[in-house]
Amino acid sequence: MALPNSPSVSINGERLLERIAELAQIGEIEGTKGCSRLAFTDGDRDGRDLVVTWMRDLGLTVTIDAVGNVVASTNSDGASGAVMAGSHIDTVGTGGRYDGNLGVLAGLEVIEATLAAGIELARPLAVAFFSNEEGSRYPPDMMGSLAYVGGMSVEAVLEVEGSDGTVVGEELDRIGYRGSAPCPGVTPHAFVELHIEQGPVLDKEDIQIGVVEGVQGISWTELTLVGQSNHAGTTPMSLRRDPMRVAAEVVVAARSIASEIGGSQVATVGSLHLHPNLVNVVPASATMTVDLRNTDEALLQLAEEQLRIRVAAIAEDEDVTVESRSLARFEPVEFDERVVEQIELLAEKTGLSTKRMPSGAGHDAQMMARICPTGMIFVPSLDGISHNPAEHTDEKDLIAGAQLLSDTMLALTEVDW
Ligand code: HGY
Ligand code: MN
Ligand code: MN
Image (cartoon, rainbow, N blue to C red):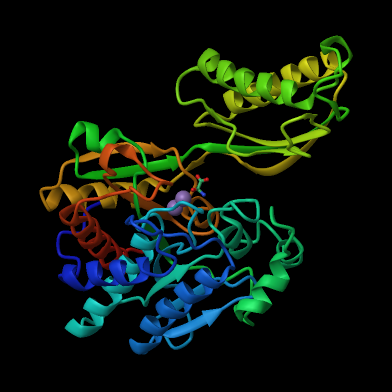
């Protein structure tokens, strides 16, 4: 489905790069290019304030919903029926400056360039940033966009307790972003997210654009292992009920499961807390998380089942109890082929090299795909590094991605589904 004469506008790449740099100063991590703006912290609030100011300076209609999702539209009635770009501006604790931020600021740039050129479009344009995409402080990830599409109630979101003991609703009130716009939100005509790949494929294969076909399934589990705290010096090994021994073998088991299943299967133990966490005390308890992902739902379920079986066996052998809590569970998502093809055709028309690929990372687009035709554009991440302050994408790739986002958004204003 090609639209040879769809409207187009040249984005202002310098303005985009300046905004990325200015936003990155908020929560900047000393001595690095990265930033730390965990969801609903003061840094997140300050980042939100800056982007909302840019939105309002453009004369856009800005809505804030009950979980803090922010949508800016060229239509005074809001984003219903608009071609929407978006992503997130919250970061992990050791984040880079492009993860999420690029998609939001590129969407804003497309709108600014289109308004400046005085181009009349058949449909409005909109750009959104969704709350708490990362899920690091408050699980699940993609929390705001999940609520936006009706996958999680506002009430459930507001009562989520974070890893630091704070509660979402109170933090939203504290930073002033518990809005009044309806959630679930209005349905756009289409949604397109520009994002860095965060993996090594495009960089290694020297390809400019990733045409994303879908997002792999995600399973986050928190395990609370309870044994018996005891003296490190006097307790014979045979009498120990040591949750750290169980945790250590769970880490090895998770990696074995990933290598046994192979393919796209990945497994990560990203957080582990011991209590009382003291050098001369056999721990009383260990709390850990296991992140499993696969593009294939059946294989992801197999990985989850294998984890359950092995955790139970190790814990039984150590006489340690296990409490398991699901923090996030999303099945694999496929994007709308009509949007995927549009991105591919426009990239090729521009002379950009492309590769169709799945996304290893979760994204707000995987939620928006539940309510409207959705697609994603990837640009290369140097050495595939992300969720790391050293995250880098070359300026020419950032600008090429934003221009393709613009071409795609404007082309989609002409498409009737
Ligand atoms: O977890 C993820 O994949 C995303 O960064 N929230
Ligand atoms: Mn992201
Ligand atoms: Mn991320």
